[in-house]
Image (cartoon, rainbow, N blue to C red; front, side, top):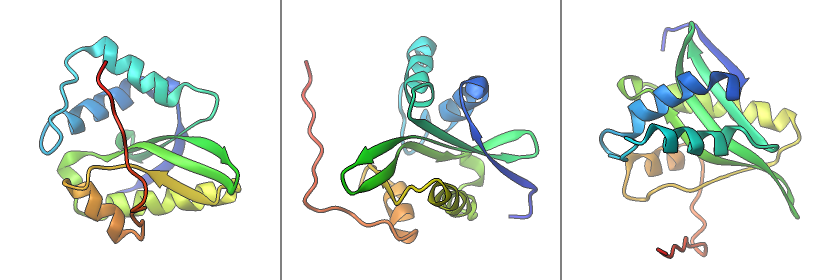
Length: 150
């Protein structure tokens, strides 16, 4: 890695840099999400980072945001969980250990907060799937996602 990295909790005050990084990662390969409506993107990000139980982490190289984890704390019957809604590393530095390092820092931080489990969803056809498996996350085979277009 070789960079001076800083890990910290971030939130609505960092919305501009979060939005810039998010847009830069998810509008290109392999995702190709159409986030051309900036207002919709801002609302989505505020849904993730601006709620009572939101927990958002940033990974910085100097003053440049290179990684973000947007999620929320969930109080479940079996304990307190951190559900990651979005996790990303700047595209041009992916595959160099930053994501694994960032995930490890997040796990250490939430463990100190008494959180005992991390949950997330990802597309099994995209590289993120193997990234999470490599980092000891396992697939819950009996769970499925449903959707209905209205």
